[in-house]
Amino acid sequence: MRITVSLIVNLVANGMTADQILADYPYLEGEDIRQALTYTREG
Image (tube, rainbow, N blue to C red; front, side):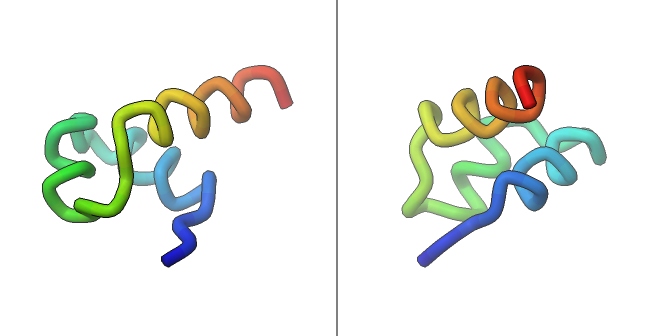
């Protein structure tokens, strides 16, 4: 399953914590969230 960077960023922007995101998308890992946010900051 592919989750886009923009989806992760939107979830965080709307107040979801990493733990909440991981609960809703159990195939993600914490590192996936960190990488998505890093990509956004650097892009």
